[in-house]
Length: 179
Image (cartoon, rainbow, N blue to C red):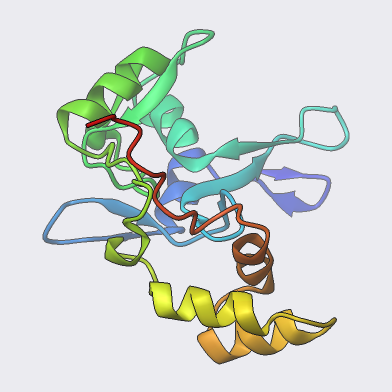
């Protein structure tokens, strides 16, 4: 089918053209556009609808897949992942829930690991250790130093700024218990 000279691709074909099937996990891994914060663009994203009739909008790929293969999503419902892979769009891995269901699922699977004060360098994704932080705070004296330090430690310049402003890498608070 063509609309204004453009071929309209059926939803299932559109999804299949943007996934790679992981043979081990059976996840349909979305390889199209992704959204999320600037560091963790993990959720698949695509544009649906038409400009001419005003229905054009951005949608999450996993929600689009659920609607295409399973059915309508009720108002206020969340589409959650059984597999915990945010870019998976396999309808067999998706289920409906609400915000609390999502929180409960996260807790049950042990994915809510708190980032503890004073434990920064033990975090699995940390690129820095306390000696690096001390060096950064001691050597970020003038304009431009932050960018140089960011390059030296292979981090974003905002990371350097946050460290120097004590927004991150906050020393462990003193023990408030009286002996």
